[in-house]
Image (cartoon, rainbow, N blue to C red; front, side, top):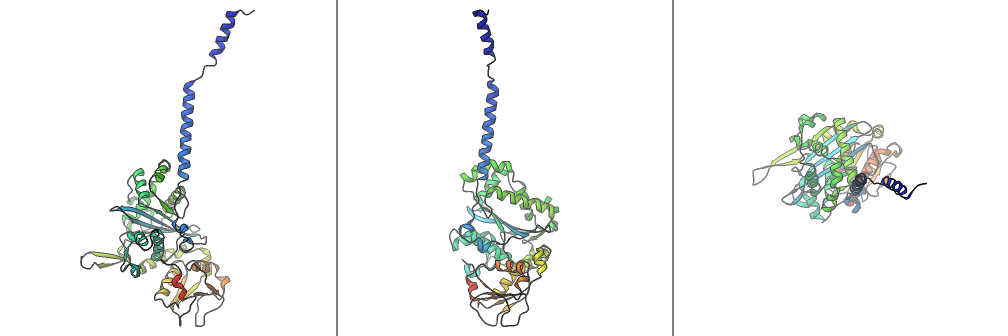
Length: 401
């Protein structure tokens, strides 16, 4: 029979087994809090959205390629602060045919002058001022205007764009350290030892984009007025694309078109100052672009081997050469461009055998957003092209500011 004292001892022994390890509980709660924090910052990171002014302004249809293609072009623009003003600092255009594993990289410095805007501003405009010029014409439309002008300058449409405003650029620099160009990357380009060091800034910039640092910087993008403008929907999507381009560059060893090189520039003395100004020589760029992208043309376009003629019936000087340039830079063979015998009201595409040139038509009609008639036949004057474009008076309203 168990006595009362023995019963007490037994209960006491059992109570010792209920002893709780507070240290383990504390560590568990600490770990749980840390995991919760990581989840919180990660959710914050993936929810940092980019802003797409082209979509907001219904300009995507006019400025970005609409048809899927193996030949993809990505425009990358970096801004910085100059005297407290936002100015474009560097522009890159990366073009790649993913089926053929061939690529070209274009570097455009901000100090080059572009001569396509005299009718609006009275003189040439520096690349650094493209956004400012657009905002001057239509407040809030600066980025849309700049992308349009980059496409006019390059003579082609792009598939997507990534634009870091000065606050986003400086925020990344603050968290990741000073970005710089490093000639170690010269070995990853076909002509890397022949171009300026600034070409390699893109590699140095993207190589510093640490996922961990970016994740923990996400709240700063929301707290500050830092904006990433892009046709890609979020900050993670932008970073993935930049890193993908960087890795493809290292693998494919693309040719670089360095537009800071003297062979792409016309140098003229600046009146009254004695300094030199550098104007972009588009004809030199076009020649090198076509030489290096001839092997990048998508296979379907190669099979069609289209021959295109462009005639200006709009009454607006220079339209035939302007659109012929865009057609040629997009991969089609332009065999002739000239003035039409007479003016016509509406732009038309004459295609005797449209079923043989489906892809060519897609590429060409992208350059003419809007509703234009495709005629199964030929115009009433002598032509030999597979596709004949007659630019009508309505071409003036195709897209403008």
